Amino acid sequence: MPTFETRIVLSRPRVQVFDFLVRTSNLIDLIPKDSGMQVISVPEIIEPGSRLEFRANAFGQTLDIVHEITELVTPEKITEVQVKGLFKKFVHEHVVEEGPGGEVVAIDRIQFEPPGGLLGFVVTAKRIQDQFASLFNYRHQQMRRLLG
Image (cartoon, rainbow, N blue to C red; front, side, top):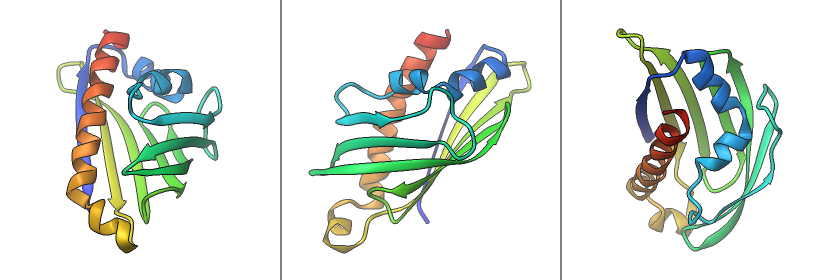
């Protein structure tokens, strides 16, 4: 299964970075304005069982996307799984670790299976990984701005 992983080093306490990630108002600020992603319904604070609903214009289609929080271990890890959307399978782990020098490393690890059918010929794993790289570049810029 294809994967995508990226990380950012921050000089904030681990608990503060994790708290930032569980508040959906912050996560909304990490979505590029021109991404075609619209928030439909999200809780104020993520917890196990929370559902995050979006509408996205992606790869020439309008898609309804629903992710469910399947795991939340404070202040270490959040796992979200797509229950409706583009991918055959999509699991996103947000991991917050302490680095050896006291810094915090926020890691995003995504395992996914591209869509099938005719769309799968156009929306390849490589194209998806390139899109993730662009989205997370923006996300990291925003995290540096918001978390310093």
